[in-house]
Length: 313
Ligand SMILES: Cc1cc2nc3c(=O)[nH]c(=O)nc-3n(C[C@H](O)[C@H](O)[C@H](O)COP(=O)(O)OP(=O)(O)OC[C@H]3O[C@@H](n4cnc5c(N)ncnc54)[C@H](O)[C@@H]3O)c2cc1C
Picture 1 (cartoon, rainbow, N blue to C red):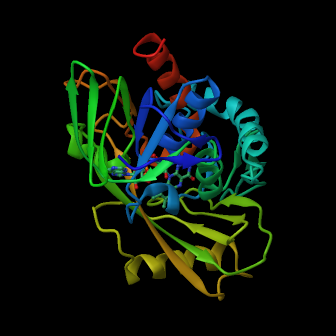
Picture 2: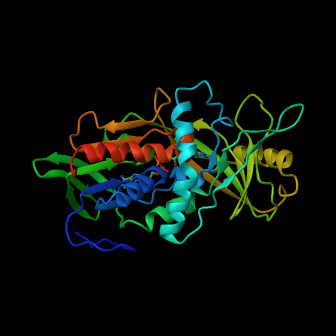
């Protein structure tokens, strides 16, 4: 078994919890478990198409029209938790996560709307900061096999055993008996120093259109279609250029890098957070669709509660 090392040192014994997938959900689950004192190991396969690499980072229950949705209460609770979690991530990692409040929603007529508390952050920085606090190994998990000594985690880099495994592999959780499908999203990162804040275009049929200033340029998003494809396509790029011309004309002509991510979506549209239906010792945390950045703090708290009630308490 390869040794895992991180800012928190080199592992000497088997971990109490193994987190499969170090994306927005897995990294923040691992961070939260570690903060609560658990000995955690993250295994991440570095999959092309991981949603966190393409995500905008908007924390906008109103912007996403969740007011009438069953997700409203947890979205509100998560939003309330984000400022403190962002502070903790920064304090522990020494890295900024670029959490900012203030998102404008342009209207067809009249002034823009702003919901107090809504904001944005930079998902790759969030994942990077959380991962600095826990050992992360590049490994692709191939099988999870519960047994009398815990859950055996079979990977392309060797095998581990832990009393509790958290399955947070995004759309790829489907390979482990979890019902999630891929909804591909494409976005553009424009090489521009323009400061446009964070803004949604006026309501229109079709995809949500938005732009925001991030540390890596101006982000414009995003398409949405049922597909496992992880390569960008020209049609999406043209549509995104149009969004850029409408929302950030000053940045629209700059160099653009395409981003493609696969959102993990369930049939009900609700995340799956709880015991795996058939694998004892495995807790599932996936299916966050287009709201994984928003819902990560509440999900991490739910997983902490489940894990504390189970194996290592
Ligand atoms: C274009 C776009 C824009 C978005 N904008 C927003 C937004 O503004 N706000 C918001 O809240 N959400 C947004 N989202 C949604 C958000 O990105 C997802 O909900 C979130 O990333 C899901 O997190 P996750 O950890 O479940 O999956 P992912 O982020 O996909 O991470 C899964 C991780 O698991 C790893 N993995 C996969 N299989 C294995 C394996 N077998 N073994 C080990 N590791 C494995 C992968 O390498 C990856 O790192 C957006 C998504 C897209 C695509």
